[in-house]
Image (cartoon, rainbow, N blue to C red):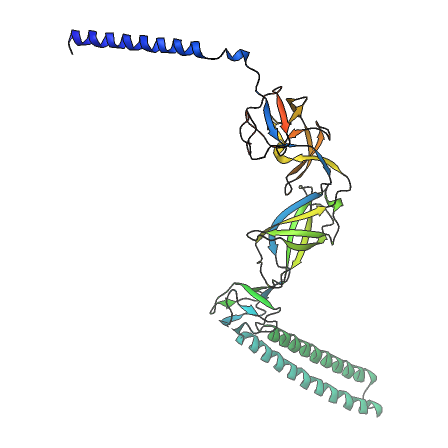
Length: 387
């Protein structure tokens, strides 16, 4: 672009700036007087946006959580060494008390039983021989062919033979009990929770084979502080909220531990409830709630009315036609009902904003409009801020 073109563009820009300035001057002459002369805006709140503290009882709620456990749990163990030949159940299988669960090769135990039987027969034979010798010596003693000492020796040998036979009989009986218990039989009715071994595995005595659980009754073990345990008593009703289930379950406080756990200052409590349809499973996480009645009335506000700033709780009031901010001290909280106890800061007749608003200023003019629809937002204030 040449010098002539640059000059033309500069002249056009100067003309445009001058026109804008003239238009702004004309507009300012037509405007109203300065804002300083305007009346201050009055904030208007509906009857649903302003509440008064209410006196009400606030039951104390104690909560503790933990996994559900099945108190009726049994572990099936091998009572004798042997090879596991088969298992007739899988994890999740339902079993009845007395039902055969598998088969174990008990050749070694059978051999020991046969050995003890042979020893028992030998002891019986020795006892019979000792009995005959004693009877013979008794006749000889009556005829004074043997001495009294010889007769006493014969009697001692008879007693020893009888004791040996009784010991052999006891060993046989013990092995018979072991042989009977070695059979894999369900001790309780329930569900197979776990298989610890597989067929073909060599079992040792007392080795775990299966774990059975009865889900008809479940328990929740938790703990409470030492300052709370005095409020609890066995038999109290408890609401148990199981994870993943919308409806709480009615339960009872079954047991309270007699002593606190070392280092934690907490005391164990156990809640029990029936589970007849086996809706719940052992291991599910649950939350227990114990509701204790409140014998007194407390001054409360909606939780939404309480604000927080720099660690201090406060509320906004309408006093004498203006907004006022008051620091408050709170007590109990009802999370379900959304109420908070106010210990200090407001009185029963105070007009408190029920929700938190943005851009509020202490001393700003405010008025309550009882007849105004709650759907209309308060003039000069933004919508409530949910925090």
